[in-house]
Amino acid sequence: MDNRPIGFFDSGLGGLTCIPPLMKRLPEERIIYFGDTARTPYGSKATTTIRHFSMEIADFLVRSDVKMIVIACNTVSATCVDDLRERFPNIPILGIIEPAARSVAESCTTDNNIGIIGTKVTIASRAYESCISKYSRDLSIYETSCPAFVPLIEEGIIDNDIMDLTIKYYMDDFVRGNGLDTVVLGCTHYPLISRNIRRIYPQLRIINPSSIMAETIERILGERDMLAKGAKTDNIFYASDLSENFINMIDHIFEGESDDAKVKFLNFDLENGERHI
Ligand code: DGL
Image 1: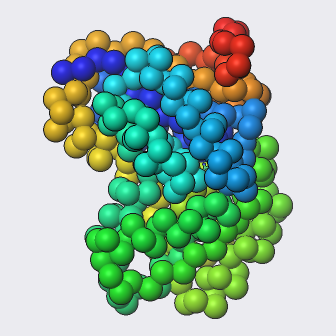
Image 2 (image 1 turned 120 degrees about the vertical axis):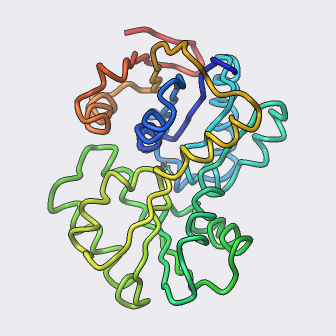
């Protein structure tokens, strides 16, 4: 048993989409979340920059005594998992792409045409393709980046024509041209627009990696006898820039039940330390 918190991080608020499935599956676990809202998006930045930011955040989480780090960001998972594991060899570190790739391989056959959508960095890394091919060869995989999705989502531009037009701009040719029947949301921000995608392409099966993580976290902690028991206290959500959008998005993701989720918001400045609000 280990009652220390699990540390999650993302470039912004997208990684929050991994939290409700975890709270449902492992209600006794405590969470520390860090969203780097001051420096989002990561998905079009250089790998060295992403690595530098990720190391800073992981350092902070380790100082906060987390028992495990979950990289709730595809962009970081595609580029820095090995660096983070090398720096913190004594702490389990889970990237989102590994469990997602396994789930794609298990749930698809060679009859499927599978599209992966993600940030520029994730798609350029081909991390999904190479990870999926470890589990299953010969699947038909197509990838495309949708770089305007994250800034719009961070701005809360979701339930409207601007987002729908942007989805069509990136996805119409991609879906129709490749005859896709399945799409993988290869960015943790994208579950926040999955309703739009479903409405525009009702025939597509949507695979949402954010909802798949919880099972793998349970297995990793269970194998090490590190699951929490009976000492649940507040979850903490840090943001490097605690914007109104971040707080609204927490309400949106927890569907107005953030009180029940016992969240405590803190603004955090990586250089100068934390500021409570
Ligand atoms: N949520 C992120 C991901 O899963 C990061 C997006 C970004 O910052 O560009 O890739």
